[in-house]
Length: 318
Image 1 (cartoon, helix red, strand yellow):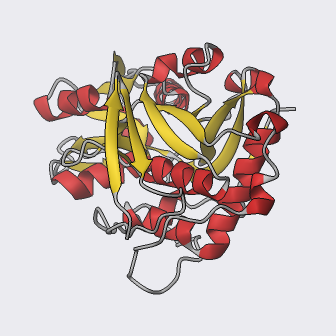
Image 2 (cartoon, helix red, strand yellow):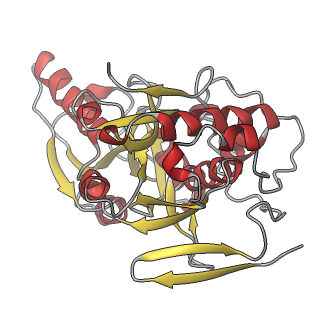
C-alpha cells in the first residue's frame, strides 16, 4: 500500500499520492446512517463495507478530455470546505472531505487527474472560476442565473429543510409553522434562498407574519446562531441537516420532504466548453456502475436523500 502525504500552500490543501494516481487506499466509513423516511433510490451494494480502492485511470475516459489536457494531470476545485457533508475540512487530518470532494476526487482519478482544493467562500466561487483560480467548484446549483455562466455536472440531488434546536421547541411541522420566526440563511446559497422565499410566500398567502431572515457568512456561523438562540431555525439543504443532527446531537432536521428536490453537482465555466464536464459525467457514471458512488454517499449517511434519480447529466440551460 502506497502512502498519501498532505501539502498545504496558502489556502490550498492538496493530496499528493506517492506513485501513480491509482494507488490503492482504503477509505474508512464515516458518519452515521440516517433514516429520513424516504425510499432508497440508490442501488448500493448490500454489504456494509464502505471501503473502496482509488479508481485506476481509464484510458477511454481519459480520451474524452479536451486536447489541451493532453499533458495535464492535476485539476483545482473550489469549495467553501465548511459545509458538512458536502465539503469540509477533516478536523483530525486537515484534509478536504465530504461527499462532493470524494466524488470529484474519484472521478478525477478515472480521468487521470489529481484533484486539489482551493478554499473559497460560496459567494466568491463563480468569480474564482472566471479568474482561473479554480477549474470547477462544488456544489454547483443549476439555477437559471447560474447557468448563464456555468455548466453543471449534476451528480446528486438535494432539497431544503430547517435545522432547529434539539427537540424542535417551536414545534415546526409545516412550512407555515415558521411564520413570524427568526430564520438563518447562508450567504450565496441560491437553492436555500429560494426555499426561504417560499416560506415567506406561504406565510403571506396564509395571512401570517413573514419570518425574519438573517444572512450569515458560513454554515458554521448560521448553526451557531441556531444553537445560541439568535435564530429559531436555519434554512439549509436536507442532507446537511440530517448529517448535523446525527453527528452532533444538538439539532433536529424538520420540514424534510416539504420542498422540491433539485439536482446539484460540479460547476464548470461555460466559456471553457463542455468537453471537460462531459468527461466528468462519464467518469461518475462509471463510479455508479462500480458501486463507488453509492459507497461514498452511504459513508456520509445521505444515500437515501442525495442519490440522483437516474444517471449524472450535464445541465447547460440551453
